[in-house]
Length: 73
Image (cartoon, rainbow, N blue to C red; front, side):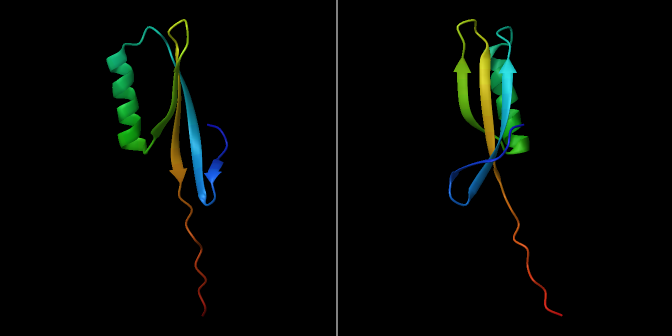
């Protein structure tokens, strides 16, 4: 996975890059991406299909930072 990237102030994403062979069927790739979205919270950021049929996929998901609360005792 690559480092976080902030396209807008206050929003951070982490990215995951996949390289999928041309031998994989379209339905397999669809199921794979749907599964990653439903179970891992990933969304499709970019999909490029090369001349040789290889798919380069970039997925992203938001990084949710929890604010630290100060406790006064």
